[in-house]
Amino acid sequence: DTGVSQDPRHKITKRGQNVTFRCDPISEHNRLYWYRQTLGQGPEFLTYFQNEAQLEKSRLLSDRFSAERPKGSFSTLEIQRTEQGDSAMYLCASSSPEGGRTPSSGELFFGEGSRLTVL
Amino acid sequence: AQKITQTQPGMFVQEKEAVTLDCTYDTSDPSYGLFWYKQPSSGEMIFLIYQGSYDQQNATEGRYSLNFQKARKSANLVISASQLGDSAMYFCAMREIRTDSWGKFQFGAGTQVVVTP
Image 1 (cartoon, rainbow over the protein chains, first blue to last red):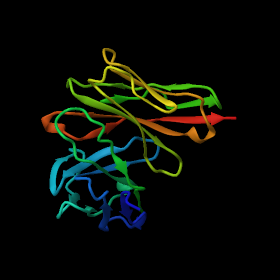
Image 2: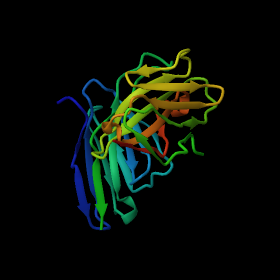
Image 3: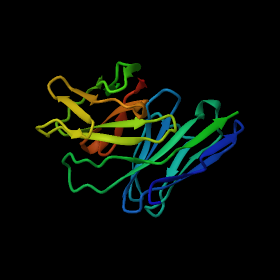
């Protein structure tokens, strides 16, 4: 299977603990995105990478959140000192390279998500 | 500020009928892309259709078509001949093409569609 994979699929943790999620994008995709989705809402942008460079980070993202993509392949999203408000589905997506600054499809391919529950 | 607005939280549609899902967007950039995604209860996000801001014709993909009205900043999704398997949450998304937000996709709140027999 060459789709986007995320691990773990489910994580239950106690408030104050640190958690880390991993995302393996589609191999030829150089862009990788992290989104957060709460029940009944649309995905909320967190951050994205082009290769290993983190190009944008949402202002909504507190300092407790950090993401890395050290070799331009897989990425990790770490949440430190988790709070109950962090409970959500964390979605990873990747997209294919684009030829230039003109609109092209470049749609996101999503993983199945990592569901976090903070008790 | 909300960039993507989906005003219909939920809709019922009978099998074999067409349904239109509304989406309006806000951007000052001339270059952008509009997308629709489907999210069934299983949770995966499935890409349906794309419309570029410079595309002259409305996009179509099988039973899906996008009614693009650029001046009104509207990108409604039309699903023809609805099937029971179309029951899902549908999200409209936009990607603006400019220096400070190149690549970021923004999603609306979604519309829940229930197809009834």
